[in-house]
Amino acid sequence: MQINNMAINARVIGANEHESHYIFDLLMNNSTEIVPDMLSTDTHGVNHVNFALLDLFGYRFAPRYAQVGRVINELFNITEDKNQQVHISLRKPINTQRIMAHWDTIQRIAVSLAQRKTSQARLVRKLSGYKHNHPLLEALTEYNRLLKAQYLLNYIDDASLRNHVQRALNRGEAYHQLRRAISHVNGDRFRGNSDEEIQIWNESARLVANAIIYFNSKVLSNLLDSFEDQGNAMSLETVKRASPVAWENINLRGRYTFAPTGELPKLEDLMESIDGYRPTIDK
Image (cartoon, rainbow, N blue to C red; front, side):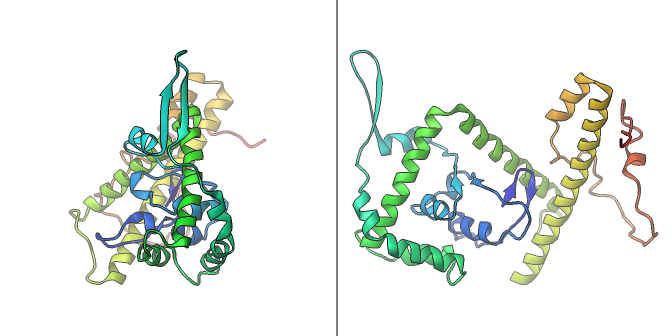
């Protein structure tokens, strides 16, 4: 799971498992001080309960559907009157009575998730074993459909929401490219002969990626302060368009020696060669 450009949580799952069954657990296991309020995924993050589960805990689910037109047409009737005005209506009304009838049970499920007595993956597997007309499954599905319909209407109407979702997915893809570059150092091969060893390798790679992102973010932040102090508008715009998820400036294939020297390198010394950069003086 990634917030802006920083990967704050990760989990290795099997190739036969659906990633949508784990996004809530990743949010709940976030131990950082960064608290997200919206989660964007691609179509693989969508299932029949994620809108509902995330809403119960105050998160907004904002997926980017690969075929959003098809999803909209499945949920809504879209017609045009004689004045060429477009009208959108649900193909099937939301059964709010069904939701209310099982609201106590839905809240108990939320409590079990909050207290970690169960996981999202276990819950989804259990729900998947129910018959399609099971009352609780129908109530959760209606709740999910209600939130999904609201989101899609906002997605159609709000260009800023569409841009936000697209930027979030772009950041995710940039991070995946960085991780691939890191793993390529080992010939794109998994390290480890057990689940535990693979998990350690995965977390180590995430640590390296986050260290690169932090370093780039600090460099960009110093450049931003310097160019603002100088009033250099052109360089400011260049910095604002730069992404901290980059590795052209990192020698991933070098040979490094780590020895305690008692002194960390100064970032200002490393940035001296950047054209136009002048360290800002704290006032």
